[in-house]
Amino acid sequence: MQTRGVLDGDEWVVNGQKVWTTLAHHSDWCFVVTRTDPESRAHKGLSYLLVPMDQPGVEVRPLKQMTGGAEFNEVFFDDARTAKANVLGPVGEGWKVAMATLGFERGTAFLSQQRMFERELASILETAHKRGATEDPVLRDALARHWVGLQIMKYNGLRMLTSLVHTGVLGPEASIGKLYWSNWHRDLGETAMEVLGAEAMLVGGEPGTGEYELDEVRLNFLASRAETIYAGSSEIQRNIIGERVLGLPREPR
Image (cartoon, rainbow, N blue to C red; front, side):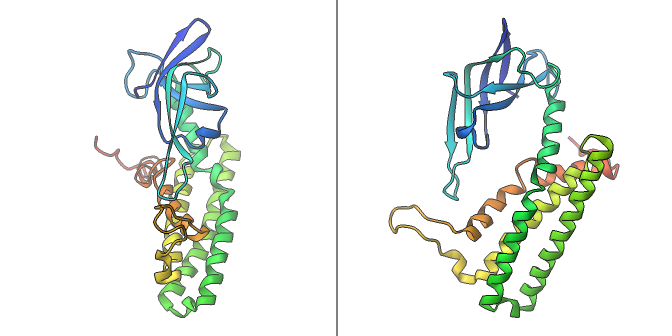
């Protein structure tokens, strides 16, 4: 953790870098986990600051993706300032706040996506029927498993919400849900490419320009590759489940 926050009167002065900041180029505010205790190490001494983006000390640089979009960004802080009161949670305990934020990102933040997944699967099924792809027993089995997986995802979400209502916090259920839906969606994208066959390798765009256009199916396929990485990779989710649910020993450092 290299980003530093120093208290100067009634303001925090922030210097450092934040990478993979989603939609930073549209944002009025961002949160920054910054080291406010220079003597601290690892997870200790961090604070969760809320920083306004519209100021001279903040520079946003887009990271262009192979999909053609650039919703991720690098953000550089050069003596950026925010009010002393703009700390979420206690000073020095930002790691706990960040972990709570991640829990909601992995869990409840993606519940609404299930409606999108339903529409996406329905569209792929319709295309498969039109192209005769459902005559292939292997592909037909894969499509059936995706439908079953969507139902499992729904009940996982309900279980997570029930736990949240009873305890007031998101536990390891969030990691179970995140691991499940991100792998499910990645596999659905691969099946969609199989439904399209060789046509899946073709994209629109102006020849010779190096630019191309992606329809929804191909865009979802490419974007889903990142879903097993952001908000904590699948490897991290498996560690959390193994240690906090199954009681297995911690991974050797």
